[in-house]
Image (tube, rainbow, N blue to C red; front, side, top):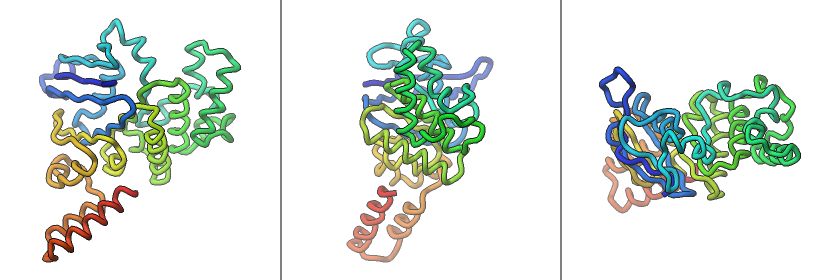
Length: 272
């Protein structure tokens, strides 16, 4: 397992309420996990714990075969990168190429290799023509693509998308979802996407639903999306295909007809 959380409890100082309550899960290398849940369910806390930005109240976190501790956090972070919710909070350079190169500069990568990496990953996220642009002038989706290029340039094993589409317009959201799909299909990265949008979970290998700091549902996308009652109780907005499937299953149609229609709808849902 590349990422393993074992009996994690977390609460902030001077607060008796647990944000995460005895949470455990594992993620193999090269797989994609979608963590779903409403605001306040503990999703982003998981990301901060894995990145070593927060320390568990109790429990253990492992990256590869090494436990994440105060002693190991600095070198383990070199295997990890995160794309935050607000793209404006991620920029440190005055141009796109400066921003993509920022992490490489900190690692003292040779300049010629740095320029090569910047060009390679800018092209990968379709931002080559914007290398000299000021990030402030980019759209939300473009900003997130630059952040992804910076993460890819660092060649980390794990990329966490922490509500990376929640502040984007529909066009920007689609751009980032397609980018995550491309990364997932390459099988070269372990991916965790943290979201309240069910559409972002359709192409994951594993889906986990959080509510009030606990895992209330986990499985493949199809297994999880079938649990309409639990999803709604967890404050998640169902996608249109699930409403239609539910209406068909509760209709007066013959069972054979229901099966044909629902199978087709599931097929269409996962082609989104």
